[in-house]
Image 1 (spheres, helix red, strand yellow):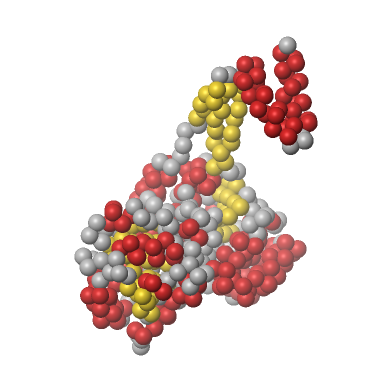
Image 2 (spheres, helix red, strand yellow; image 1 turned 180 degrees about the vertical axis):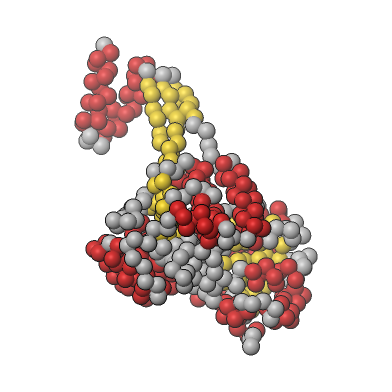
Length: 436
């Protein structure tokens, strides 16, 4: 039974930087009670390697694997193509093309400029050499996550991409996951999930190689492990429960608001949906009709649970809507207002933004080319969604002529001596004397 009393109705004035944690759970508070257990898993993998992975897979997934079948074989991958629906395969290929087009556009050309006479400086770009992708496999199968994580690494030119995902009940990885990975020629795919998979990719085992960066969403155990190991291996953005915030005025179609709200809380009971509106009429229509919409969905139990984390916020004007949005910094933001571009100008914090009535979040989840691996839990204030530049190192390059050396030397030597770094000053002075 759906209890609409579980949805909070809040005045926007109550949402402040001090009070926001009372309304919206932050990632840190969700992790505090399990960090010690995550460390135990990490340390076991570090000490015992592949045997720890086998033990944890049996314990957490109820699957008994051997060291011989942790790695997915080439035959398993080829066989997967015969098991995947042709329409789905075509849809994945279509999404891949759009993702590659979008992520290629993010790349910059190498450049250099004249700083002053005789001094040229610029930047070159080199890809990270190895990346590990994590693909969750708990409540559903997510080939779209493979596309989202693999595309920017592939476009950036990463040489080695590996993938970890928990096995299904049959002890195998879903064929849809394998097919999506094969589209990017990912050769090493491992039947390992949870915090133990993150630890394996960070430290390496006899079977799973260590990588320089780990990306991809997961549950609180996975994300806790990524954060705890972020001093060992680079990670993407801190991720937690999925979020959607919808800014809607009186011109918004309330049915669109409801279905978009539902679409992003059907993943998991911990997901968060927020509607911020200036319209009492729209809010009332949402309250009255929400139950009718939910009852038709197979995941209505999950949606109903997620309503307990969700809320409707009444705002006096659109300025209040954007203020609240910037405080919350949602993973997904939909702007359903008379003029969405005007509202967009005042948005500083969001993982991804969807403008107007014809741009629902699920298009970005799958086919539009934009990436759906996004910061949650307020981290959109400081992190971007996954993109090609996250897999590229930007390296400064400086080249001076003898004239350029002379032009820079006075200021550089002066600062070096002030900081009592005499060898720094001497490295410059020696070259000036050689010139003479």
